[in-house]
Length: 108
Length: 123
Image 1 (cartoon, each protein chain N blue to C red):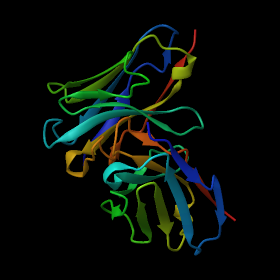
Image 2 (spheres, chains in turn green, orange):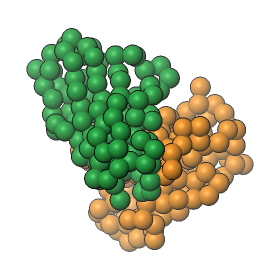
Image 3 (cartoon, rainbow over the protein chains, first blue to last red):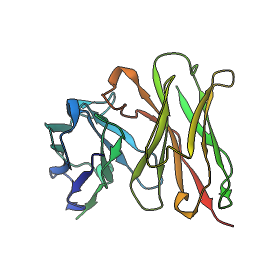
Image 4 (cartoon, rainbow over the protein chains, first blue to last red):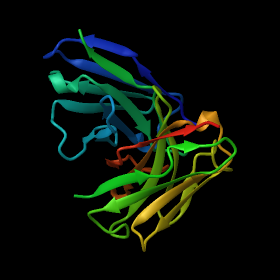
């Protein structure tokens, strides 16, 4: 089973700043099949990125994904007020599908 | 607009079977190639994939001996059954859909989610 470790646990930033979130896999993610989700309190996760770098339909271009192998990054170029949330990565390159523990992006 | 809605008991006794249903509205469950999935989230914690049914079933090995996911095309629903539950199975249960168009070697990302339903295991 691939363990995904997200860092930092909490990121304190101001609106307009750039956010960089990390997801590190315990072994290489086959095909770089990695996704990112946003989850707000009491809401369902929202798919942002799939295939490490492809934006899901309707996702603003301030969200971008990069990386390969064991190291992946979600970047939010300029934080909007609605972006303060928890973010999860998920790998689907091998079974079982696994999720990271999450990074909370909070207002500084 | 396709929507997913979970339903089922919010309270299950230990050792019993947890049964949930996900109703698909806005489209036929048989249109397209999808992975109909269940995912859970323990209170205040991260996400755990339970399994999916895309014509074939595939389960998380940690739950495989207790879980089954069935698709009922006549009702446009899919279901989750989890046997012999304990307090450790208390969680929010989400049904979700992933598209075969984006599939990887192990499964899919999930582009559509139900609202989630809290299931508490307690006597």
